[in-house]
Image 1 (cartoon, rainbow, N blue to C red):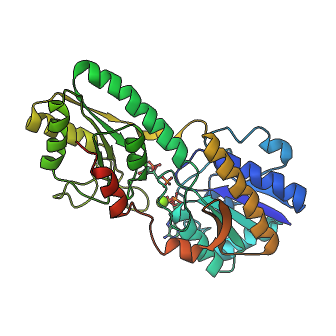
Image 2: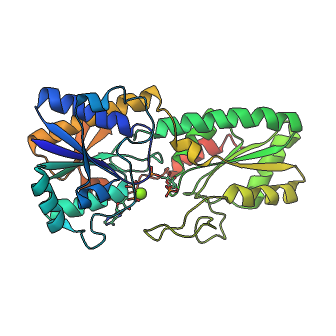
Image 3: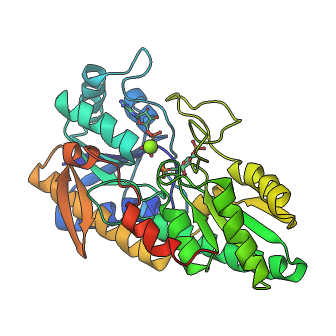
Length: 342
Ligand SMILES: Nc1ncnc2c1ncn2[C@@H]1O[C@H](COP(=O)(O)OP(=O)(O)O)[C@@H](O)[C@H]1O
Ligand SMILES: O=P(O)(O)OC[C@H]1O[C@](O)(COP(=O)(O)O)[C@@H](O)[C@@H]1O
Ligand SMILES: [Mg+2]
């Protein structure tokens, strides 16, 4: 069987480890052959492929990014898009099945292609960790490590100047990176998209920290909203799916905090550093296992499924099930940490 792999959506540390895991197990255990589609769905629609044999994936598990490239191009997009045309491309290239590695957008597209008769399986990917039906996604642990290191570093400069430091991390709809890094770094307030807080409440926490003689550390997810904000803070237009490009809420909060409390306050937007560079050991292991497991789905013809982490097991989950809900931070998880704020 000849299998095509693609990576789609935002990149994420661990994508290369998935590709390597799939190629190593698929070639040795199942005699599968692999090609990679370049730049996500674009490579599939346009038939733009590279051979993926064992030497092509050598030493790949520690490398960040994706060797195949990624994009936000859609499989139904453009004059050549659509399942019928994709079926022709697969036929012409002698490819029997597709492995799509991506987030909820990629899984939505994969589900639609599956409904339209394409033999496709998936691997979940998101640094935000907000895909349902999988306990963790690779890339998340790496992002949390990077954000935690940033908190540690901001603390020493904040302490030296007795400033309030505000760190903005990624998290469009879900505050997992903020919650985990803020917890690990001992932040005095953690602000996430799921649970608005008033500026008065944030300032009350900041003042209580200052009153103890400490320099306040606030971690905010990019998608956090004050109660009066209708959507996440955005000044960079919208993406090709018409979602606001988020970023900059920390730069709104910092002057507000300074004005309300009189404490000198500085904002840092961590940005794409969270998505770049080498994956942690945890993410390499998870990504490798997911890549290996997805070749089982191909061998068994379990089309329409993706592999997922349940506890310590890798199990198949139908795209439909995974897409039914969005894995947000539950209120009780937030309240658990909120008692420590201030
Ligand atoms: N509802 C949808 N229907 C068809 N294709 C979609 C849909 N949502 C996303 N896609 C395609 O999948 C690509 C990746 O989705 P995106 O949300 O950008 O990343 P991710 O897969 O990481 O969530 C999008 O650019 C788009 O081309
Ligand atoms: O600028 P881009 O590449 O569109 O991505 C920004 C978004 O991607 C994310 O990193 C999420 O990416 P994934 O869920 O696709 O891993 C968000 O936190 C952020 O809002
Ligand atoms: Mg998405």
